[in-house]
Length: 301
Ligand SMILES: Nc1ncnc2c1ncn2[C@@H]1O[C@H](COP(=O)(O)OP(=O)(O)O)[C@@H](O)[C@H]1O
Ligand SMILES: [Mg+2]
Image: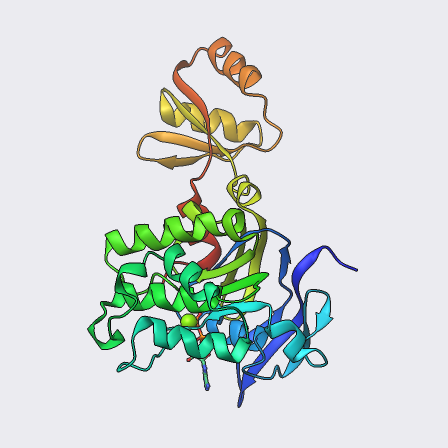
């Protein structure tokens, strides 16, 4: 038994000769709000389709609730609520009627529809036809659909795509509340770091089909190669002095940056001052999450 709700092993998908997903081993712990982050085209939706058995992997395995999706498809999917890319609806049916279809398939109580509409804040619009819905309302209806029934896992593929900032905030608050209110594990994909940063406690970063990082958000934050920033005079001499000690400094706009490694800041300060340099600033600086992400992914294409 593993403690992971989702566990994939070397999940790979090739389209002809193109590898869209390559050896991805996801580990999503129970109760996590897992942010699956990567630039457009990184392979998020392809991975998610394989998780949901909407697409067969070229190689690798998917285990959900410790069961292999190949042998326990219905068992697993009954307990997984999903929204993959922009959900489609019967536009001429109302919100309620659309959810009724899902309810019938899952054979659960009608109360489930009321509950889901309440959670996504659509109760007022339950009898309105979906063709009159805004994009945000449709996204919320998609989440409601994913919530119906006895779900233990929610998989949401870019649920805030195409929403205005107010809509994004609303969906974000909704998602953050889900593990507590519904007792579910959530995997949410996004190409926007700030989204994931505000929502997730665990993160997987994918780029060009490969998983580059997986761990807690805290672990990601501490991943930044720390540097020490030095402002001292005369700068050029200080740079040479450091080089003489085997420390290569990077001069960026009048500040020297050296790798943190095993350097004791107090010792360094003493050494510089005792060697006659005027030190006006000495500090340890960490890269922020955005810098770490950009470094990992090489920027968003
Ligand atoms: N059915 C398909 N046939 C061929 N290539 C595909 C198919 N689906 C996705 N791709 C390609 O695989 C890559 C990953 O796509 P996708 O998983 O949709 O990325 P993301 O969801 O991260 O934006 C992209 O280069 C995309 O063009
Ligand atoms: Mg996608």
